[in-house]
Length: 294
Image 1 (cartoon, rainbow, N blue to C red):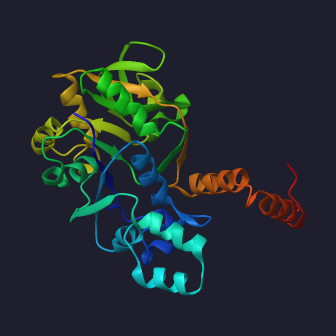
Image 2: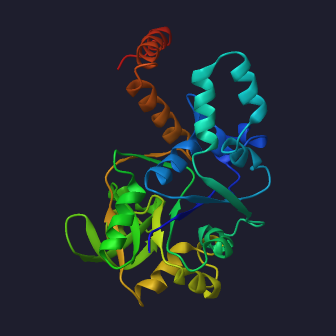
């Protein structure tokens, strides 16, 4: 079946971005002038996703509002002949069909996915984490979709190579190598010590899942952090069905952390001709001001 729906969990508190996230959703914090979440939804849309399901919590209304129409703002822009800006916000308001479901307790990624069960039904679906931006001309989630279709609709987990000393920050996959980009998985290990990690292939937040994952999520006990881990459910699924890990192409930014957010901001400012020269001039001035040499 064609994959039409994507789950984007955004219920986290965003504590790394306090005090800003005391009042606004982390996902709305902009990289220059575009909210982080825009890039996640844009990737899904470019891959052919027709419906995005946000798994939210209290205080996240601004994310849904961002993808809704704002008739008052549109009227203001039209009256003031700001046609370019008007076209821009109308495009955002019509990007994709957006709906949401509340995760009343933050009990892990597995629990967040399970919260959307009634909206997914019996279809395969995508999961994109709300603070992992991946930039590539062929969307990362589309690469996973294509591999899933190639393997009769199987589950596919997106992975990337990381330095082995960082394995304790990620879920790490293991399995049988099929080709230079693909593994047939035998399981996953959640945040192993470098000396215990089976590979250096980490899961940064892109999944193609089949609806049978819900039945597994309903049965598994709480795992790491006393939460319902998607990793644990995938491990169960690996014993029943073929599950694949795929090294997707693209540059990934972990905008859920301050260093990753700064990295994304610098990268986006430099590659946009509208901001590049200003950014470079400002950076040179600040480096001189604070006596920093590179």
